[in-house]
Amino acid sequence: MSNTKTNYKLKTILLLLFACLPILFFSQVSDTLERKQAPKVFLICDDCDQQFLRNEITFLNFVRDRRLADIIILVRSINAGNGGTEYSLEFSGENNFSGLLFNHKYTTTPNLSDGEIREELKKTLKKGVLPFLLKTELAEKINYSIDGLENANSSDKVKDSWNLWLFNLNGNIAGNGQSYSKQFYLNSSFNANRTSEKNLFETGFFYSGNYQKYQITDTSSVIGFVSNLGAYSYDAISVGKHLSVGYFGTYFSSTVQNLKNSTSFYPAIEYNIFPYSEATNRKLCFNYRFGLRYVDFYSPTYLDKMNDWFTLHSLVISYKQVEKWGALNCDIGSFHYFHPQKYYRINVSPGVSLNIAKGLNISLGGNFSIVNDQYFLRKDEVSSDAILLGQAQLKSDFSYFFYTGISYSFGSIYNNVVNVRFSMSDNNW
Image (cartoon, rainbow, N blue to C red; front, side):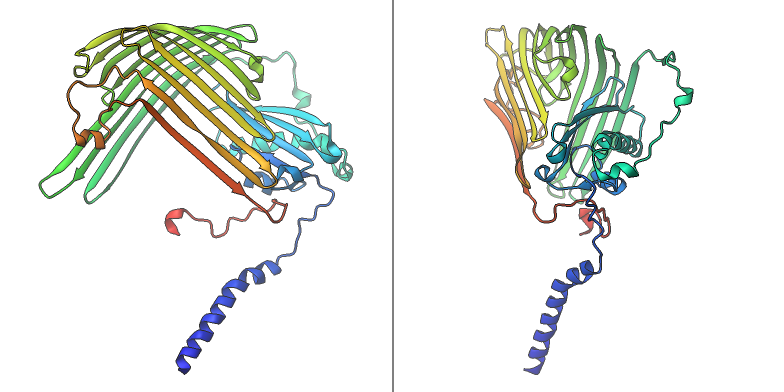
């Protein structure tokens, strides 16, 4: 009986220690975050190293909700013509800074490391908050300098020996396995592009392969292999601030879709309701294509064909808007074939992320397709093994995927401190 009471007391003590240790630790840490003169900042940036920025920029108070902020910093990004990323930073004032609005841009090059990118973003962010700081008591503590001005020459011009051409080559090999199964993946791609204010040209190819083997019994196994190979080329010529013309050319081969060769060519025209210069903030584009497609099949289709010609056209409507309260985007696209079988496909891809209340964020989106263009379906019956291994497609009237997420945070409004102690990968928990 005494042993039972002793064990009970020990368990009680351990539980109390477990509950009280955080309080004991945290009580030893003096609160150094009361930077009363510093403005409160809310940073909206999916691609930023926010921990680094909070740790490095110590003259700002980073808060967890935009409704608590004096300055809202919205970072938008878009692919740049040099193969890097153009970051557009919008600084919007609230409370005592109401009415202040500034914009800054920073463009990376493809050879920059993550560390170099975040350093330049830090510099851009610090420049952007300067007009706000000048309206606070911190103004008297600000010193600044301009590096290299004495060597500046307005007549200097950048000499580009590559004439704006950029090339990318990628490849990876991966594998995994257990005692009864193994998989092997191979992916590679190449593209070349040249981007100027008046013209965007890109061409490239890609390949992916997946080998799978499952040992069912000592004498029985299932083996599968799928591959996809493709090449593409497109050219967009600017005709003013809203209109572009050009073409799309594609080649595709897929064992899953029974396509030995699929070659398409489409002249195209696109109109953007908003100027293309506002693409990081908003766009509403209408893209129309009309062209031809020729296909060869690995095995006879359900129409007993080994090849076929198609005349088809396509309309895609793309909408995107990024604001302080969140982001909206939606693509609606359709393909229609001038063919006796009246093939067509309609795709809808919406997405939204919203900060709907203090500390409450929600995101949702996905894709839904109405499918009536599976002209490649095999005549022969597909085995169950091929279906399970993803080696062939079956007839379907639709396809879809979706995602949704919600988060809510509350507690201290400040979010300045970075502490990486006890950080480790999920595999080690």
